[in-house]
Image (cartoon, rainbow, N blue to C red):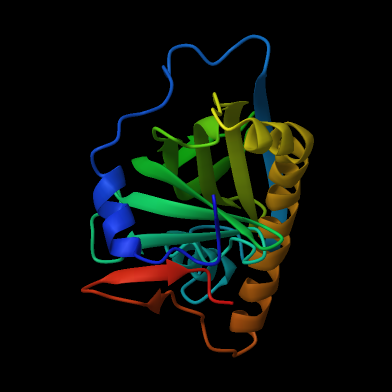
Length: 225
């Protein structure tokens, strides 16, 4: 925990590169584990494959860059030129003036067409990360941009599996116990709202926000405030 932004993101990223997961992915059931799935409408396209310059394509670029996150809740530092799968991200949770650095690692990229229960098909692109040592939570979060190929409906889907991690500091543990779950669900709502707004603005002709380069090299911070 600190007050203010991370003083040395490059060093922070170097440190978490040596971290392992802080949980066993084979054991994510039982008391204390949350399983969430949240969908947000982003726009409509013509049925069929994604339209160039349409809501799906715009949202995909924003999700790749982590521009959907609500800046009052979360920021992320990462190497923008690094391959997506394996990308380490130094998240910075925000609560009032306090900042909480937390490491995650992108473990998979989603890029597929799949069958839906209603008989239609959907195209999905996205990625997921898992939490690393010293994170306040344990688990995995999947971010997907999904288009129903029959209806043209485009959505942002967040699927989370999470549990509170062991927090040695009693003050932080108490605060997380009171505000952690509430902040998590607020993040889901705010991320969907922000992404929908950005997609609509860009589709109408606004410039697309891009992560701010802070150096050295290719290190960036997202989202754009």
